[in-house]
Length: 187
View 1 (tube, rainbow, N blue to C red):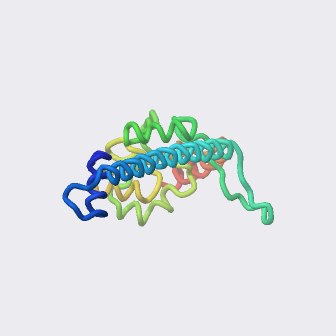
View 2: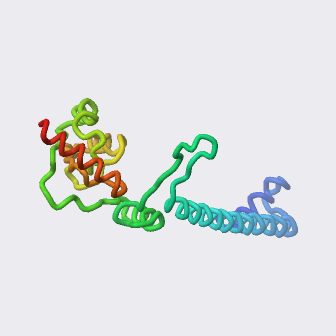
View 3: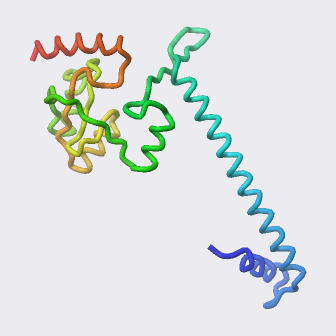
């Protein structure tokens, strides 16, 4: 990155077209560059403040369920975020460590997907609606398709699953555990 002085001289040379621009023009360019830098810092501070407001709003919303006023349809519901407890801690963990690994359940897994293709073809029938917790061979949580694709691309299959160990509310967990018990009985 070039200094303001270097940028000011280059700009003055471009404007005047001489090898050695006038000191007045260099001074003017320096002043403009300093002003642009100050505005950039102010814009960055304003964006940080806006991000803070957005994050605080999200945290308030995550404690409740938002519904559509006209249809009473649930639009957003977010319980506490895994072992981090709140949105800020989850974001901090992701930014600091890159991997937001969680602790696997302290029991034997209820099953596993040996390959990505098995997960694609069998996930719904094997673990659908059972509030599962899935972890790849590196111990990373697999929640969405992208996590399973990462496991495929990095060769970290099999992905193990545990019934009833996901991130649902207590009422949802009870319902999932009943369904998981039925699925275990069918197996």
